[in-house]
Length: 529
Image (tube, rainbow, N blue to C red; front, side, top):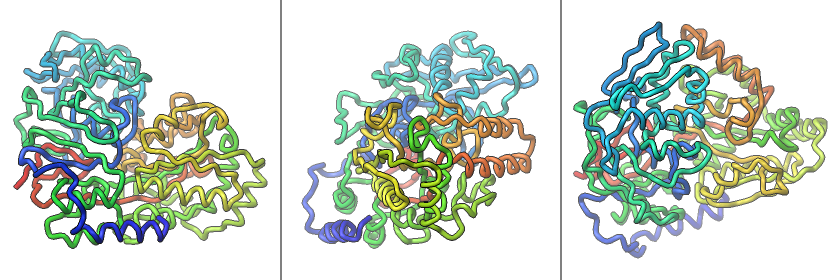
C-alpha cells in the first residue's frame, strides 16, 4: 500500500472514538454481525472458486463427509459407507431425518445429482468424473458409485471444505448446467439463506435452520454436530477498512474476517478484541497468466519474468512487514506442509535480477502487446499484490493496462476467454487457500487440461501426468519425489508464479467463544459469552 494511503487509513482509524455509529442498532444477543472479506457476487459454490462464495456455501449447504481437526474425512450427512469389490464399489447411506430448507427430505437422488454437477467443475471432482463407471440411487437412503479403479481419497474429495465444495442441493437445483449459476439457494446446512433480504454489496442474511439434524458428536472443524447458537448471522459488506475497524471497536460488528495489516496494532490494543490466526495454512499468493492469447501464451515470456519476482516485496505490500504475517520463499506447495520442497526454488529465492528479466523478455519475442492486468479494489491483499505485479511488469518492459474493479466484477471478467480487445484479460493476482494447494490433487493452478482448467486454461500434459502419478503413489516418500518433479516442471512451464504465503489473522470481539480454528470462518460452535 502506498505510504500516503497507509497514513490516511491510520489517520481515519485514530479518530475512532469520535466515529459516528453505523446505524446497526444495539447488538442483539442472538445475532452475529460479520464483516466478510468481499462482496458476495455469486451464490453458487460449484460455479465459483471465490473464497467468499465457498464461505457462503459452508453456511447453507452440508456435505456427505466432513474433515475433522486432523483433516481426515468423517461421515457428515452420510450415516456411513461401505467399500467393496477391491475398492471399486462404494455404497453411501444417508442419516435419517435430513431435510432441505424447503422441508423436503434429502434423498439419494439429490446426492447423485449434486455429485454429478460438482464433478464437472471441481479439480478432484473431475477425477471422480473420469473414474466413474456408474453412480445411481439404490433407494431414497442409499446410492452407489462404481469406479474403474480404487480411489481411497474419494471421501476426502466429497468432504473437503475448499473450493469447489461438494454442496448437496435438491435434485431440481443440481440439474442446473454446472457452467451456469444457480438462482435457487435451497440448501441442506445449518443456516438458511434469506434471499429476500439479500442486498449485494451491502448485506447477506442467514437464519438458523430449525429443521437441521445435527450429528450426535461434538463440533469437530467441518465435521460433527455443527451446533448453531445464533438465530441469525448478518454479513455486512464494508470495503473501507477504517469503517470496518470502527464497527468492530464500537461493538457494531462482532467479527472482521480480513483486517487491514496496518490496523492490527490498533486492534490489538483494544482489550475487547482478539486478533488471531484462524486459518493456520494461510493462503498462497499467485500470479496467473492467460495462456490463450499473447503475450503469455509463450512459455519463454512467462519464464522470463522469474528473475524479476521479489516475493518479499509482494508479501510486504500484501500484508505488511511483520514477519509473523507472511512466509517466503514459497514454492509450488504450501510452506510448512509435507510436500513443500526446495527443488529449483532458487529461481525465486536467489538474487533478483531485473535487467536479466528485461533481456529475457526481449529475447523471448515480446512485441509490445497490451497486457490487461486485473485488480480487485475491495480486497486489499489482492489489490496490493496486483499493484506490485503491475510495477514489476512495467519495469521488465511490458505495456500494462491496469484495470481496477470490485471482486465480483473481477471473477466474472476472468471467465472471458476472448482477447484483450474483446474484453479479455492477460494476468491477475489472487490467493489460494493453503489446504487447496498443499497437494497435487486439489492444486488447481498446476492443472494443465486446457479448456477445463482454471481461468487461464493452460495445456500442459507433463503436469497432468505427474498429477496422475501422485494419485497412484504408495507412500509419502513417493509423493514427495513427485512433488519435487512437479515443482521443477512448473519453473519450465510457469502456469503461475508463487508470490509467498500470506498468514492473515482475523479479529473478533472477545465476547465470542468457541471460534473454530484451522480453516475458514464458520459459525457453528460459536457463542456469545
